[in-house]
View 1 (cartoon, rainbow, N blue to C red):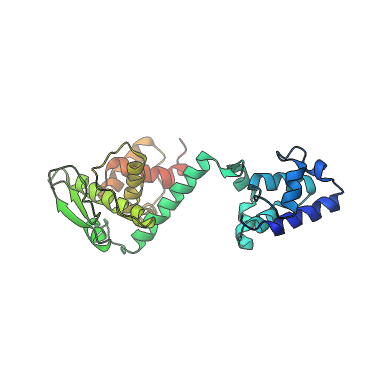
View 2: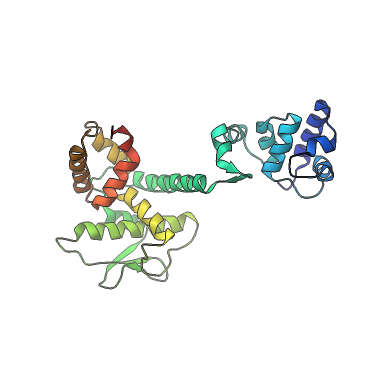
Length: 265
């Protein structure tokens, strides 16, 4: 908040209307009355959001108004950020770790969904065509899967009758890396996959959405509700994995994420 003059003026007006002194308004907010005086006059460093909110509550200024004045947000954006659920996700003006994680997952889902929408309704997903659409060249190699140092070529294992799904998953993972890197304006790193890293976990998450897109999974599941029994669910899981030619673990993750709430157990 480079220019906090309007916010400071609003806090000062609300304080005076509430009949509070600077000392009384600052008490319990984590700042001194002299700091509050500087904030009200638009001097010094802009207050953090949690400080501004604390003072606002003392002087009776609405949180939505604080958000509107603290940052150049549209009115609708300010209203959403003042939602109690969002406010509970904030700790000291910052998103909690769990909230950040949920936000990141949602971003990755949208990243995959936007890309999948451009592929058409092919079933199963043509991952080679998808890679080509991203300008990603696939090279079969017996070395570990990974990118060249320019990020434009991706090594995949040779195909075999019992490894077709595995090869598709490697291609999808390469596509995911390319999507994530492109999203931040970079290129995938030229190293082999390390499945235990956060970067690889994110790539696997996106890759599962590439192989089992939300829209196509919804179309498959519209044929009927998920079976109530564990045996029936396992059969559906196997069907989805086969239909999308995806690893069973990825199919399970996608079913769990999209539809597990329908099950009674």
